[in-house]
Length: 135
Image 1 (cartoon, rainbow, N blue to C red):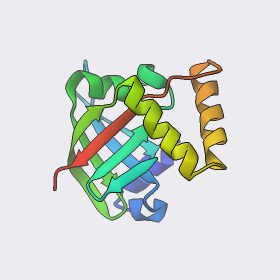
Image 2: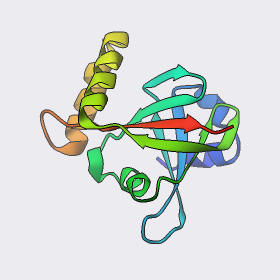
Image 3: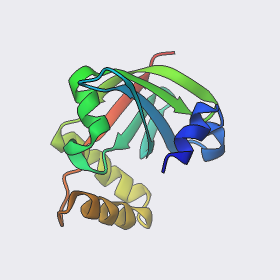
Image 4: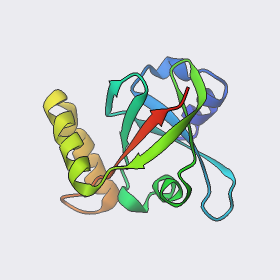
């Protein structure tokens, strides 16, 4: 699971297209740089990216963003772009996931099931994080 991070850090993120993004965030206790690669579920405009937290609110990267809001995104040919972070509330997250389900009816059951396994619940609450690229 660390291979995509190495590829993004080597500026080869373009091989993943626009569906995968690397998020660089800061540890909420250590302050150290941390990295996670996740799927993009929506990109309604070029500078706006939405991703789900598959492990819910307990995911370390989600908790780090919640604590300090520091994020840099690497996506396609863009590397380490500063991003403003917004954690969508439960209602907004559900609406964005419903949009995803309508747009990708074959992919949605797989994503939902994977997140149910990850969160160990039949009906997972999947928070969405919205990033606004700054440059």
